[in-house]
Length: 114
Length: 109
Image (cartoon, rainbow over all chains, first blue to last red; front, side, top):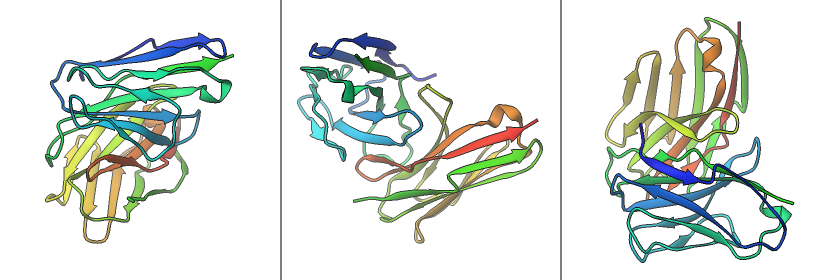
């Protein structure tokens, strides 16, 4: 079983609030990802990181921001939540650059902005 | 930019039939390809990883093939069961993980 955790699992929050979605892994993986997935739709990469102090924007433009101060921790922040941010957010990690490395996913955070 | 396509988008079969799920990708310079399963509202569970140098990988009733030069992978699920009902996602890893839209499988009892 993968040791990657996302909190909270579910969040309902009002418009305009600042929120931080947490993602932690205990596998020592340098590469981490955030994906956004609307119900029944495909995953879209919104952020990724190669390691500490590295953050990159993904394929889908997002109003969220990320930080990577510690290897094991990759939080995602929305400064002012809007109903359009309602979605599932999935975090993943892997050892980068190796052909035999698997990516592992957390259970996701389902965000609803009302 | 890597583009990943999965065909078909949905599949419904009676229990016991074999399943064939297809994945194609545009850039063959990949490290590996991974097949995942996703149940409704849940995260992703890794099923199989095929390294770029491998042609296939097997786990139980699952077998995945990879033809890197033509940009194709196929996931075979033998003797399907109702518990196999889920969405199956193909992910290609070059310097980042790129996903297809998935194939939603329904196995009828």
